[in-house]
Image (cartoon, rainbow, N blue to C red; front, side):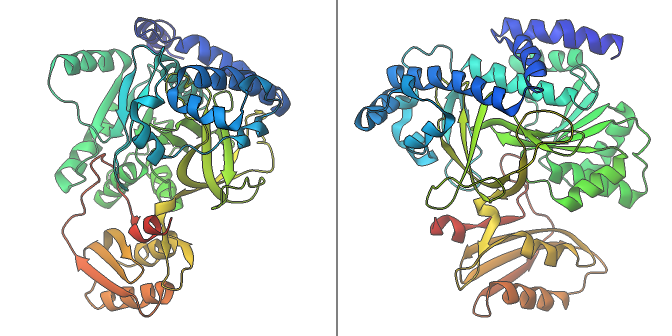
Length: 452
């Protein structure tokens, strides 16, 4: 660790967190130890945290008070994590309907958050200092797995540009002290891509962080222009907030000559899992209880795919208990070779809306359509919108050697997978805009949403 990095990681950042009333440093240090515990000791630890979470929810959160009483549920009587299955699932619809009844009546200083709502109505919820401290600590711990730390030069490719104003000026000063710089990911046009590549080469950061779609765009642009970005000393690229596809990982790793570390979580569900250098996605077990369930809500064993359900143990101010994420994943049957006792999320297949439904009702991953488009010569960008089972729209951004005759091949290939009766509308366009959040979505299936 360099001298300045040590100053930031050990003094400036902890001081900032203390001023915010976050005990992030203490939590991270505890997590540094607990990651090496046995799975059995971790389970005991989580059970000890689960009881007070449920007790506070039943006593101080109106929604859960009304929820527990008819069930005769006593939080103090739970004997294992499996007792969580006695409780109903929490869904986005419930949070929207219950509103302030989801808040603890003794909570103070809650911050309002919302998801981007790219697949429907935005979700509004609240987060307290406890939750923020734990999420930041979990991310910090995972960052250190890759031999980088807070204070190392960093470029963040994200969806929200810094705006002018008093608070933003404070943020700019803070970011300079922390040696982190934001590059807005809204527009991946030629001019911006040139600036992004030039800035990365000039800054020579130790790490990049951001959306895999945006960073892979930058990597591809550098390669296309013959600009070298593999000799800048970048040690790792952290990708999060979108599904990381294999071709994106390969493009990023090849361009920047460094490993790519995948992260999984969300504003609503929290910091769920992060990839270690041995290649496993470790669940933040000290804070997260993760279940895999089928369409009927039945618990699935390790190795079987299903919807990811999260209980966040640091959310007593606005509890997330058995929260259905809408994401599809699989728990690993084995521990990681790195020696950490943290459980492993083997597969993260994407959101339920990353899947498509054929005319006959067969559900398949959007990759079945992505692979068709990705391998077409001259294909720059694409987006598939399944309006319903009988209509799918395809937006394409192409360049030579793409030929108009290839559109017929796209239609034929899509019909092969979705059904001959399905109408496939292909539109050539100059650009495909990002979502409001700055993310890019390759697949949007309204048919899956309406089928749930």
